[in-house]
Image (cartoon, rainbow, N blue to C red; front, side, top):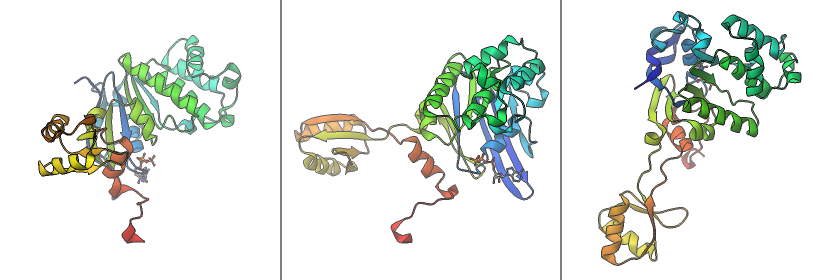
Length: 306
Ligand SMILES: Nc1ncnc2c1ncn2[C@@H]1O[C@H](COP(=O)(O)OP(=O)(O)OP(=O)(O)O)[C@@H](O)[C@H]1O
């Protein structure tokens, strides 16, 4: 595996409090890795350690095999956007980018290129950042992260504050970046966004990893959806054959078996099928809520709790 970001047995303690608890994962080149978890799960802490802003208590996070602090000119290898609001409020967007270009050692023309890339107009670039909307700050932060033409991006909630068109734009930008071989680690609370753009997922709860793998693996379809001219008779036949079958909310049946097995039972009974396909699999929100249920601040009310 071509891992560009590697996190090995990383732990962060604040006094007695364990914010990140012995986590390990890797982000592959050419893939967008979605980093998910409830509030306070430890995502930002992990990303801050990756970017050399917070020391780890134990374990390590490396970029191309080296810690951030050991990189010669970090911005040319890894672009980081952790807190879009942390940019110097008294400077204009253009000043911030120009300073960044100077520090990294890239030509000044790159500032205009980046402003154009993130769709900040010259007039907006000339305003002081204190007068920027959150979405504009995110765009500026992304321009800054991309300034050194890095092959790795670490982005903490970059879609926060973007309007729907902005979210759509960012999705395209990140997809394109990864398709050209870049590595993206992206945290977000917008599960729908992650579901669309991410290839790999790392889910964290209470400082520990509760799931990781490819999106396809984690959201793999389970069971079969079947419809027939007589669902009641089919359900009876499936249950008699030892398969679990339940009425589906939208009509038809959900069966815990492969489509071929369901089709075979129907054929023996002479029941005509009108639809037979693999189940849709868990949606990301469902998976997220079930995996992190113990760590959620808002627990759903159950009948017994009323
Ligand atoms: N400097 C600090 N001192 C003490 N505790 C801290 C510090 N920084 C973070 N924490 C705690 O560590 C835990 C993890 O915080 P972190 O910001 O990493 O979570 P997160 O997953 O990014 O959450 P969110 O989704 O709300 O941004 C939280 O309980 C937080 O209060």
